[in-house]
Amino acid sequence: MAFRAAIRKSASTLAPLVGRAISRVEARRSFGSAILTAAGGRRGCICGRGHAGVSHLCGYSTAPVVSNKPAAGESLLRIIEDEIKTSQETDDHDQVEDVPAGFPFEIEDKLGQQTLTLTRQYEGEHVKVEVHMPDLVTGEENDVRDDDDDDDTERPTQSSLPLVVTVTKKSGTSLEFSCVAFADEIAIDSLSVKKPENNSEEMVYDGPNFHDLDENLKNAFHKYLDIRGIKPSTTNFLHEYMINKDSREYLGWLNDLKKFVQA
Image (cartoon, rainbow, N blue to C red; front, side, top):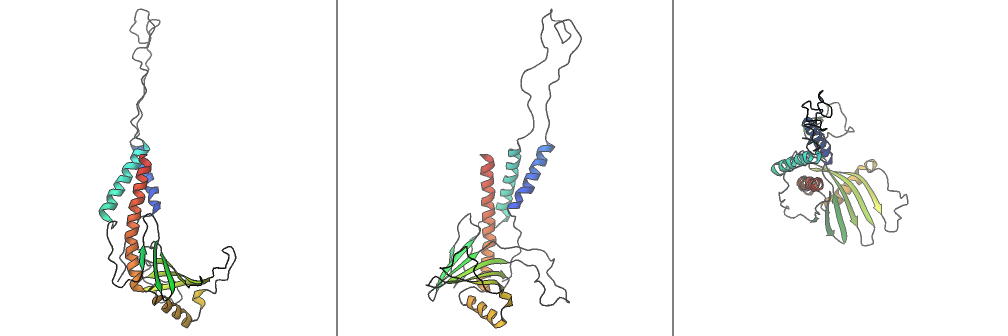
């Protein structure tokens, strides 16, 4: 299943929102002014109409000057509301994902969290998968590598899904895999052994660079994860799931911004 191209705004969206808000405020800014005209006239009267020697200020008002400048918060709120409306109309924030048949994990999805947690038991082992928000790439740039490039060159830029897989034995010792899932492919970036007696502040040897291992050993670890459910059919579904989760979390973030500005 090919990844669906999608563009998601991140928290940095607030900067252009504020920029546009300030521009609107500056464009509509106008100031009222009070003009006091002094004309030569009889003593004690500055309006020139000569009110029987009574000293007074004609046409002068002590009422405060009213500015037509809208509050910056109101302008920002209006832009946020427009963005909420756009997101509700275009994003898949309300889509319910159909879990594929035979999906081996229990899904724990907490609203407001940027990660998803999967758990399962496999032959006495506890398998936990922490799924992060996908790195989405759209467009055709870097999609094709030059024919002269060798196999060691960096892979073409494409959407990916970061994963942390932890397999724990009853003794408490675990293997922790840092992975990146691409379309129909899973790459292991690192592997480390975690022992319960290890102090988190100690500099524990995590082993060699995974990419420097023997090819047979690397293939064996890929198979190790595959039989525990970490395979393309799983990660492709998770990629779609996380795109929709990103839409839901973004909409929730916008609503939190709205409540803050309104308060």
